[in-house]
Amino acid sequence: MDNQRTVAFHTLGCKLNFSETSMLSRSLEAQGFLKKEFEEEADVYVINTCSVTDNADKECRQIVRRIQRRAPQSMVVITGCYAQLKPKQIAEIPGVNLVLGAKEKFNLAAHLKELTKGDSAKISSCDIEDVTGFNASYSLNDRTRTFLKVQDGCDYNCSFCTIPMARGKSRSDSIANVLRNARELAQNGVKEIVLTGVNLGDFGKGPDGAKKSEESFFSLIQELDTIDGIDRYRISSIEPNLLSKEIIEFVAGSQKFMPHFHIPLQSGSNDILSLMRRRYKRELYAERVEVIKSLMPHCAIGVDVIVGFPGESDNHFQETFNFLHDLDISYLHVFTYSERDNTKALEIKPVVPVNLRHERNKQLRNLSYMKMQHFTEQHVGQTRKVLFEGSEKNGMMEGYSDNYIRISTPYKVEWANKIVDWKI
Image 1 (tube, one colour):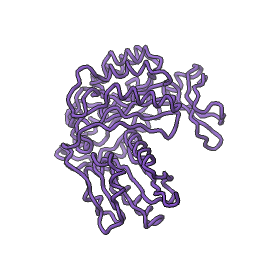
Image 2 (spheres, rainbow, N blue to C red):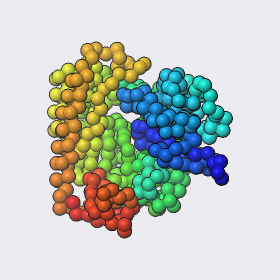
Image 3 (cartoon, helix red, strand yellow):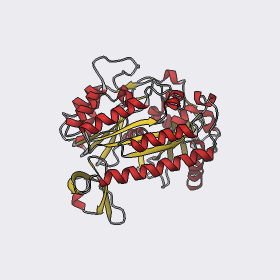
Image 4 (cartoon, one colour):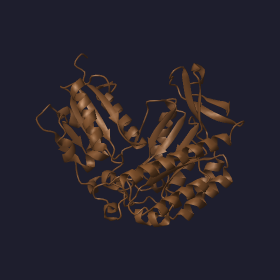
C-alpha cells in the first residue's frame, strides 16, 4: 500500500458544499484513495468552491499558492459553483491541473484516474442547461450533526444571484431515498440532521426538474419525523413564500423538528425586494414570523439580509433597519452586496458606494448581536435540551439548545454527542 494515492479536500461556502465534499471524499476512499488533512502533504488536492463569496477568485489563488509551496508535485482540482461559472479563468491560475463543472464533479474518481501533471489545466464542464439528475450527499465528519442534501438548483431568478447559473434547475431527491439516507445516518450514530438545499421549500421536482405531484417538502418532513434513531432535525433555510402555515404548525407539534427557522428576507423595503425580484413583500414575511411566534414563542428565527443593493437609498436602508428592529427575530446573517457577472442587478442604478455598504453592514451586525442577546435573556432560568458536540477546545465543549442558543461548558467526555437537560 506504499503507492496508495492520497487526497485532501478544502471547502468554501455553504452547507450544501460541505455535504458534497464529504460525499466526494467517501467515494474516493472507496476507490482506494487515502484521505489526508488539507494542511498535510497529499498527491491530490480538491478545492470545492463557492460563487456567493465576493472574493472567490482571490481565495482560489491564495489556496493554490499555498499548495504549490507545500507540495509542488501534487495535482490540484477545482470544482464547485465558481468552477462552473468561470472555468477558463480558474484554469489560468498557475498550479491548477483540472477544473470540473457542476455535472462532472460527481465523476471525480474517473477524472483522477486519467489525470497527469501537464502544462495546462484540463477543463471538463458543460452548459448549465445540461446539468440534470440529482446526486445525494451528506456530511459525516462529526456524528453530532450532519448536513443532508435533499434538493439542488433553483428556478428563481433573483437579480443578484448566480446560483441558478452555477447549479442549474431545481431538482430533488426522492422521499424514499432521503429516508434511506436518514436511516443510514442513524446507524452511524448521528443525532441531528440539518436538511439542506438551494431552495428547500421547492422540494418535489424530480431529477429532470419536473414536478412529482405526490411529493412536497411538507410530505418529506412528515415522513422524516417517523424515522427511529434520529433525535433532531433542522431546516437549514426556507423561502418565506414557501414556508406554509402547515409546515409551521407541523414543526410546532413535532418532537424531532427543532423550533428554529432560517428565513431569507434580503431587504425590509418592498421597493428593493421588487428590484431584487424576490417573490414576496415584507408584509408576508412579517405574517410568517407572527404565525411562528404565536405557536412557538421560544422559536429561534434567523434572517438573511443584503445591504448596499443597487438603488438602496438611505431611506430604503432605514426601512430595513426599522423593520428588523421591530420584528421578533433572533439573529441576522448580513451580506454586503457585491457585483456578479451576468446578473440583472448590474443594470440597476445608482450603485451604492462600497464604504457605505460596509457601514450599513456594521449597523445590522450590531443589531443582530443585540437581538441574540435579547433572545437568550428571554430564556434565562429555563431548562432546554442541549446537544453537545464531541470536540474539545481549550478544555471546553459547545452545544446548541433545541432553539439554537449556543452553550459552552467545561468538557465532559460523557456529554459528547449527548442531549442534556440544561438550565440556561
